Image 1 (cartoon, rainbow, N blue to C red):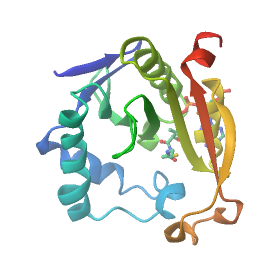
Image 2 (image 1 turned 90 degrees about the vertical axis):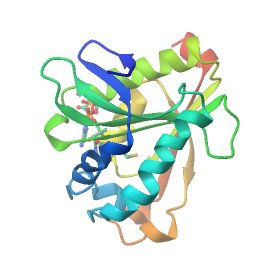
Image 3 (image 1 turned 120 degrees about the vertical axis):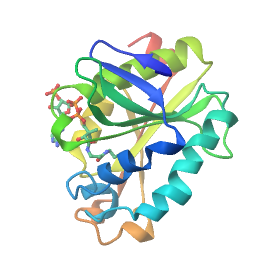
Image 4 (image 1 turned 90 degrees about the horizontal axis):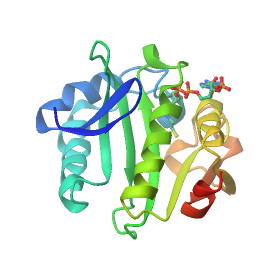
Length: 187
Ligand SMILES: CC(C)(COP(=O)(O)OP(=O)(O)OC[C@H]1O[C@@H](n2cnc3c(N)ncnc32)[C@H](O)[C@@H]1OP(=O)(O)O)[C@@H](O)C(=O)NCCC(=O)NCCS
């Protein structure tokens, strides 16, 4: 396996062109997509033609160091979802977005916090990242709790994108959290 990161219970690897079904299945659960699309599944052709090619192109763009990665349980090998640590397409390489999307069966056991801690450590200590940010809907309490457990700081509120205005809680807008390398070292 092409391992990117190992934590106590999980291992991350790079996606390959044959992995579309993992992403299609993940994005087909309305609970997973609740604060992302209002519960609607992502169309399989969008995943095959846009999302997966962008993910794979990212490994080349960022030399395999940054990107979006598949997460598996080390004990049993179940696919649990994905995590990302990656710059904006046209942004500086030392500023990276943290993101996560897990299968419902894997919620509530600390996986998002565990892997995100590993990603922050890798980004700041090994990859030259200087700042990590994350954004979510104001009402996505689970996602915000992960950010807060990582000692990320709420730095801004953000408007709801026009295509998300029908999603439950969208009237409360979104939030942006950040942590710098210095803050991470002093946490
Ligand atoms: C958000 C998400 C990644 C959280 O993953 P997780 O592995 O369950 O998170 P953790 O177990 O590390 O939980 C971190 C903290 O948040 C709390 N938490 C998790 N989900 C919660 C929820 N829905 N509501 C309230 N608190 C929640 C946990 O209890 C924990 O706090 P604690 O240690 O004090 O008990 C997961 O629910 C998910 O993938 N959701 C769907 C996709 C999504 O919304 N992604 C984020 C988009 S920005």
